[in-house]
Amino acid sequence: MIISFKKEAIEISSKRKWFIIGIVIALLNPIFSGLVVSFGFLTEPKLRREGKIILIISFVWAIILAYLIEWLKKGGYI
Image (tube, rainbow, N blue to C red; front, side, top):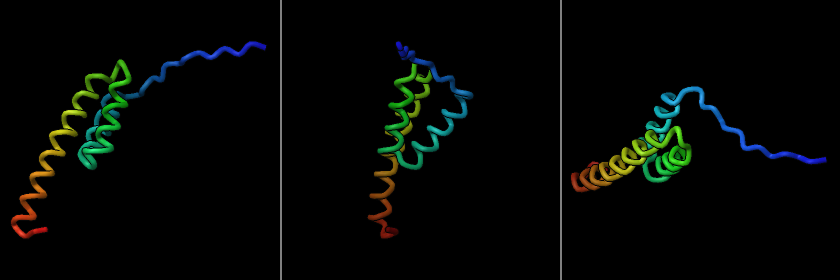
């Protein structure tokens, strides 16, 4: 008996839906989850553009949060 393993392409129902989910994840946890999701998107040929956008948003949001937290600490709010 010969078993054939075929690589099947997974069709995503809505690129926009997954893109919005990726953005939300990147905003909630930019360092770990945002990077993981963006790298996941970058591995899919049809989602490379969205993966780059999520990666950039993740990095920018992480930098903004770092400065914001430091500013709040200096102001005595945290």
